[in-house]
Amino acid sequence: MLVRTAMKIGYACINTILSAEGISVNRSMVKRTYAERGIAYASALALQNVNDLQKVINWNVAHRLLLYRMSSDMFPWMSEYEISDLPDYPAIKQRLLEIGRTAALHSLRLTFHPGPFNVLATRDDLVLRKTIKELRQHGEIMDMLALPRSPFAKINIHVGGAYGDRPSALKRFIQNFRSLPAEVSTRLTVENDDKANMFSTGDLLIIHEETGIPIVFDYHHHEFRSGDLTAEEAMFLAWQTWPSHIAPIVHASSSRKKYEDSSSTHTAHADYIYEPVNLFGLKADIMLEAKAKEQAALRFKAELGS
Image 1 (tube, helix red, strand yellow):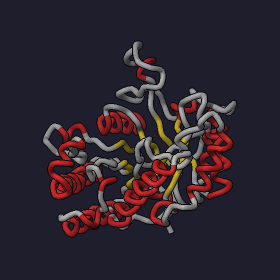
Image 2 (cartoon, rainbow, N blue to C red):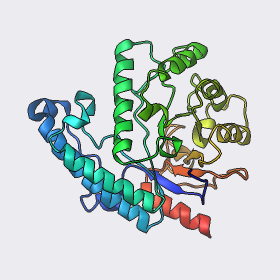
Image 3 (cartoon, rainbow, N blue to C red):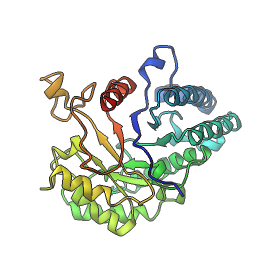
């Protein structure tokens, strides 16, 4: 059984320090290139990406940043093929297993946050089929990493669309969730939105009650869709949806408009974190959604320690 341990601080996808050295986990290509060069080129890029993922993981361990969101772009255009059909699949599978062992050895928590085109609340059958496939593939990657089938290795998404009728959208989300394979359904989490016509933390409670899916609380989003809850109330509501033996994950970011660029949109994220993250006495892991990535996480961690 996994247990809640010391708080983990993390960042998403790109390590800017290593990127300057040519280390990348999101090599990709445009659709035309995929059409011209096909699955063999996608496979070669994916192998380079997972090889560099090992380097990023090693860097994170060395700097004690023990929460990391993997890039959904590690496998270019994976919606167009099955991962097991890649020519380099054996080498990719072996490398991912080694990365998973490194993460487990150092208690580094790995997660995914698939893109906004994954919409379980969709009213379109084609979008739903594509969503289920894409989410399944994220789960398959986590299985290759030998990560637990639990929200410890979360695959986090948004409801995806209210279509002017939040109750009906929530109902579709719940219904379509039941079509997901176990490698996804056991890991899925859902996050509150930053638009007034979308879903607050309180709105998401019905999903948890019907499916058991934990809620990821995003502080910055809460400012724009509070659902008449205080941050403390929403944080506690989300926190109590998680299994007692797994630390909840919260998302934190600062307003770019407020701190760095007054011409930015209200919802834009700043490069760094400019205020404390109040957990209201609760224990949780913190994913920093800051544009400066690992540099923001290192600064935040240093300020937290001081």
